[in-house]
Length: 347
Image (cartoon, rainbow, N blue to C red):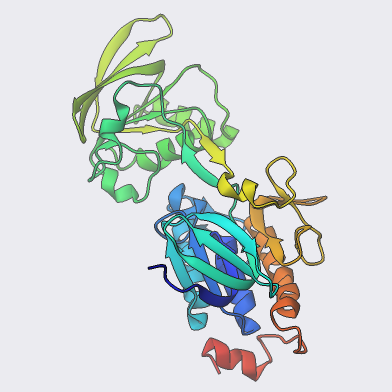
């Protein structure tokens, strides 16, 4: 028996920082939200890829980690009681006769809403797996052991023998951040040159000079141990000579594979896998469907979290007129409106 569709004002695809802040802006206008995300928790890339990496360009927060930012956003939107559907992917989007939209997910959830907001970042993303035979048997083991494509909690790697592979910002950032915690740390890259920011490269070179890390121009050829318990890897140097390196944890940072997924099948106009929007409302060419954050494109677009926050604010104003066509929108400031402060529980 199929469950009855859930009815709400706004359905948001994506529960990253931009989707979360959209809940706040919509909540101020008394619009209720349901959010669907393929991940098993809120935060999107912030919690999936760099939960403990510092972010420096959020207004009013000189330094905040990805996880801290998500925690603050969740606290900010708690008065509006958003409903989350984690571990689900939107697989269908249908326009109903009454003008509303019906979303369907891969687990059978159906959500009917006046407005759909796509805040899916760059789409579904997954780390690129190194071409090492049998690596999948060592992935995401507990206690900082095995193969990990993201660092969720630095402390789990304390006292471990760590191998990091890659030459971009993520690889160098984690070399710098994990070196003080590791028993030993080795970085390998296929060449003696990096795509990372120069100051990060300089810091890595200094750690190598001080003997706190080791760096080899090499690649990982094979991996050894029992499933879930890594013991060593075989490295191959530039001269093709091979040797074994004992390690507890292997962190490969080879970038991400981005897939837009079923969004590409919704009949929404796309440009290079992004959704063109207007800059007054951040609505797509399909009325009632909005796109905010990295998923959208427009002249002058900057892929910054703070830009997404601005987009969410203007989107909410436009969404109100669709969800509440017979009501007048009164613009108010949270600093001076007693009704808004009451909603936020601060009056």
